[in-house]
Amino acid sequence: MSQAEPTSDSAPFFSSDSEAEGPDDQPAVQTEEPASGVSRVRALLTVLILCYINLLNYMDRFTVAGVLPDIEHYFGIDDGKSGLLQTVFICSYMFLAPFFGYLGDRYNRKFIMSFGITFWSAVTLASSYTPKEHFWALLLTRGLVGVGEASYSTIAPTIIADLYVKEKRTNMLSIFYFAIPVGSGLGYIVGSQVSNIAKDWHWALRVTPALGLIAVLLLLFVVKEPKRGAIEARPEHQLHQTSWLVDLQDLSKNCSFILSTFGFTAVAFVTGSLALWAPTFLFRAAVFTGEREPCVEAHCASSDSLIFGAITCVTGILGVATGVQVSRQLRTRTPRADPLVCAAGLLLSAPFLYLAIVFAQASTIATYVSFYLPDSKLESENYVVVPTRRSTAEALQIVVSHLLGDAGSPYLIGVVSDSLRKNDSFLWQFRSLQLSLLLCSFVAVIGGGFFLATALFIERDRERAENYVHADDEPIVVPKSGRSTRVPVSSVLI
Image (cartoon, rainbow, N blue to C red; front, side, top):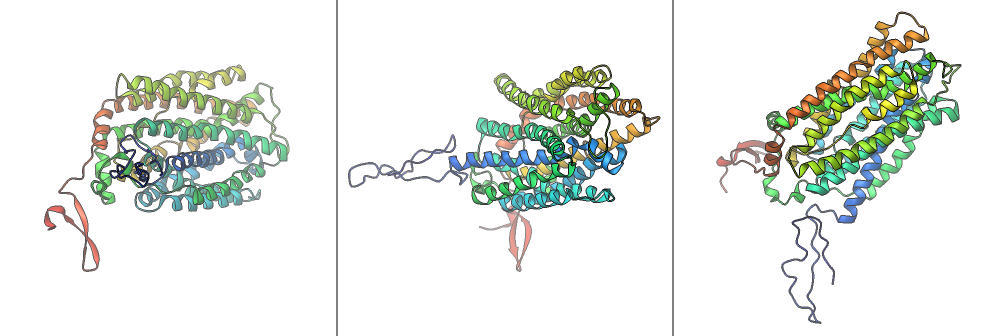
């Protein structure tokens, strides 16, 4: 006799024939498969594995930022070319996201992610062998890293959404997004410390590829592909795949999705700029004030990446945890809690970000203290898109937010810094970067405004997604002369 495992709020504990009597007059219980097709234990393991991979993603992304002074000194490049390292990565990541979003809504997501992580790990390892005369090779390999990361970041949240609903989904997605600040901070820490130990920045790029191999094995042998949308207690025949153009038309009418995308664009602009330039900015401030020695030979000895990485980890965890708790408490009073929390995080961070940049001139310690606050922005996740369009929506949000956000912001900050620099003295190396980074605090205010606008539509759009029913006049695919053709439902006789 086996007891069924409840996996959702609507799943029955026993099947309809559980009253049948066995030989010992004991009720026979039939195990019922969870709606998602994934057991509760394996679902939890899946979330933990996805968190581990997400952590590796962000570790790899910010390892370069942790050793950027070494890279600038090694290749002899200016701020504009340094900013390109982040820009080429974000551009490839951004343009490939819709492609993987399309595949993720239609094919096995586990295999797509496994391929992407394998490719990303191999390219990252190859980038660690770039010679001094070929900076273009480092740019090329950093761009190719975006291929693997696009295949993962677009798809992984949709798997979690297909495993849990309501509060459980929010909690699991919060755990998943905990990996972002932790992984980012570890990228700074591991990159700078491995570089310090080896006295060679190339070794900083050889850590995540080995960990990526473990991630692929876990994906292939532990993770199981869940059924799309089945956990949301709706008949499977109501979830019809539609064409990509129909998906785009539906998303274009979703005001919450559009406005929150622009809000995340502002977040991407600010975080993309700070992620690449903050450790370098702090290093230049310390050199200008005499607290650090400038770069000598092939190694820039500095603890700024280590300190900034620790700040990113601590404040990121506190920010996500605070955001989740505040959002949960506020949700009992208003269904608009999620965008309001995001807006509050950005609007409150803007003045402290401004102070952090300005204080660096007088005291780097004051700058570290101020950086604690802008880094602890409140984060929340809400789904206002139907299950069959979530990977596409995720991909589109990645494209827009990165195209207008961190795809160009690191390069823009570098170019502005180069244009403001009057000479190569330590003063102007610091001052020009300081003035260009002040732009981030103003962009944060604009992002907060977009999230406030999102709050006006979030309730309507969330209800529309949760109660979505396939319209009778939407086209479906039927075979015609050996091929597929799209015809209205009303023209098909059953």
